[in-house]
Length: 151
Image (tube, rainbow, N blue to C red; front, side, top):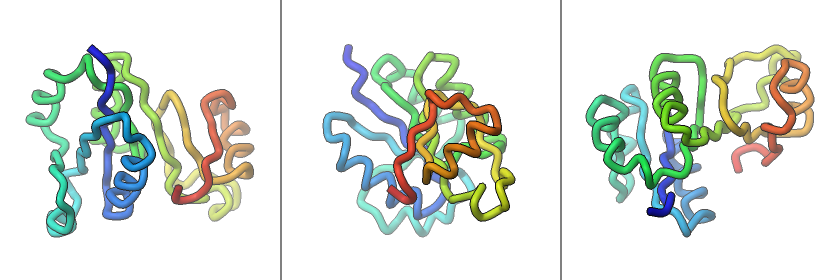
């Protein structure tokens, strides 16, 4: 059985737009978008896509496909309960977790981390400057790729 599914975690409409951008780039994969339970549901109605709310039903249904899942892409992996539970679930099954940096947080906050990012297998970040500060904050350099902002 091939690993041909990417789970994409979204918390905002901006993340949903990023989902569609990435889905076009990875045509060889099937995507499942799981959204944070606090997202405005009227946003979801704008799109012709099946979305899954992050809850026990999601976890129960995704377990049936676990051997097909290649990655979890997280538009945000902030230190909050839902992202923690989600990333832990995928770590438990040894599925790589890829985290996107949402903002130029070090640049905007005088080199201080504004939103802590949970452990991930790969961090896709905004700039070389951000990468350097991540490394100063003990994030492993081999897990960091600069992809640009809002890519």
